[in-house]
Length: 396
Image 1 (cartoon, rainbow, N blue to C red):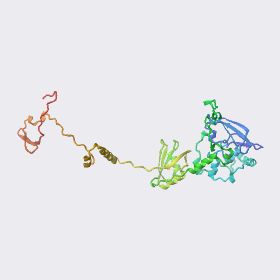
Image 2 (cartoon, one colour):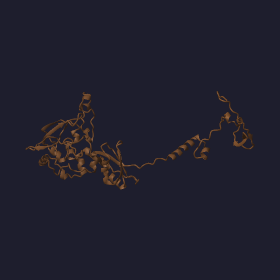
Image 3 (cartoon, rainbow, N blue to C red):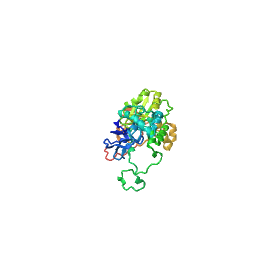
Image 4 (cartoon, one colour):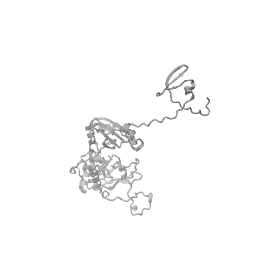
């Protein structure tokens, strides 16, 4: 916490502002201007040390709006008046944590507010803890669903150019303000005191409506599904980090992390463990500062049988008219008929008559008898066919 001291008149003097990370900006070399007792607090109306800086190259200048005493009473940023722990409006935080206004309320009248701030000045200056501090409260389900885990630097954009809205801006691209039409509606009508006290805040009402629409995931009807699907992973999240987050809800069977695709599968041994994990971590799963999405896994779909696909493909070809239906009815798999007997080429050395054999043909049989050098043998002979002329260049 920044060092703060108060003079005899109760005016505040500090060395550094109390801001959130978004208002401070992403520039590590921030140059600030400090002016003691330069502004009046918009809550207690006491003078305090004002700071002014530029959080980024393409950002507008930021300045403190309330004193550090009022800032510590509500644990909010001096610039945007959002909670320093969760980055949410005061109304959302108080509603989600069920904070009673009787114990933590700050009076709205000028005299009572100044008296309350004067009572807490010694404690804040000494760095002591007191009952009205919100810095050590644990988040619940609603806050975990709505809080921002990363800085929101878009809030530091320049303001809208008033000359552009009437069509008279002559700077063009060199203009340091945004050339956009202003947004109208209930979100543009905010009061700094209503935001601080947590009443009639349109931004808070919108966030609370969003929290009411968030529901829990219903378990699937298939009791065999015991796998949870985790998406939104980055390279910093390891398998051990996921195990440390899920092991408290049941015995884990396996964890499969696909870092290149940014998701993981967590399988429990029992269905009760998976249901308990999805109930406790749904819409509020944060690992290493990264908010992840948790859903039920899908059952594995069996791959189609290849034999069945081949039969279906053959049936489709048969019904297309490429195969006769008579052949389909006779056999399951169609095989093409053998090619017809073509003319077989015989060489002179294959003729037994040229070798001195005597061939006698028997009626009603396909066998022939040949006599070679007084020996007889019985073997089947092909029918005698005229020999074709020898090819060109063939020497007999």
